Amino acid sequence: MSGTVSIDWQTTPAAVWRRHRSGLRAIRRLDPVQWQDLTGISRQQQALARNTERFLAGEPSNNALLWGSRGTGKSSLIKALLNRYQGRGLRMIEVDKDDLVNLPEIVDDICDSPFRFVIFCDDLSFDAGETGYKALKSVLEGSLELPPENVRVYATSNRRHLMPEFMSDNLKSEMRDGELHPAEAIEEQVSLADRFGLQLSFYAFSQEIYLQAVDALFPEVANRDSLHREAIRFATAKGVRNGRTAQQFYRQFAGDEGSGG
Picture 1: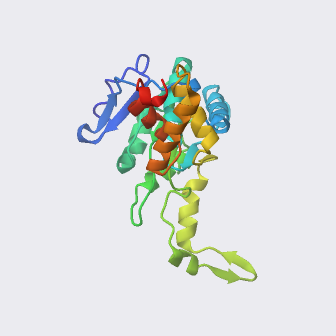
Picture 2 (picture 1 turned 180 degrees about the vertical axis):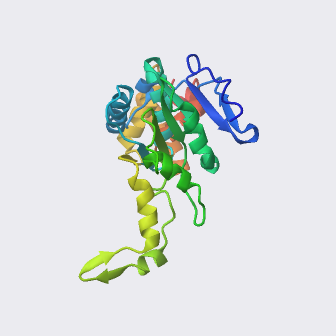
Picture 3 (picture 1 turned 90 degrees about the vertical axis):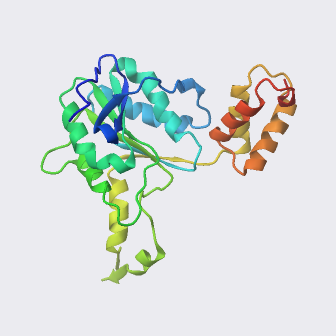
């Protein structure tokens, strides 16, 4: 597979699959988000950290699906995970959903490496008729060959089951001998998500958590009441309270007199 031989995993913590070159490219500028910068998702942080530490130690660990509301820190959590654990041998490969067909080849090239790899699939979901999930299934659970011990898949999605759910699918379910038998389409939808042993849910922030995130971004502002009024007004205009909204508020108002500074 061209492109992969140039990756020196000793000095490269992450790479991304590039379709046009059919190979991996080292990521030169990592997102600097730090573990301690994340707010409002401590439960999810603890669960993912424990799973990752077990993975790095060669103990039983799971593939992970982070699902839920947009902008709540799913992707940031995985990026911060790499920054926290790359010194302990964690490496990360980002693969776009449309390139999952190449996943078995990617895994073949790293399965004998001494490093531990997380395959990162961001914003993962499949529409009706797409077949890329079949390659993902083989890496998650193997086929005739077991999946490699030094590879786990961490994915983020707005959908819990990763695949579209239609009312017509439910109508095709039936009762037999007093038991509900889901339609084949539902079985297919659920079976993919079931292969992620660790599933972490993310929800829109309460106002209290949102303001905590804002406070963490504006530690120097003395007038908290004014800051909070502006932050609430900003979130109301956007129609959503989450970590992304807090970051956007910071980028718009940092250093502004209107932010309470």
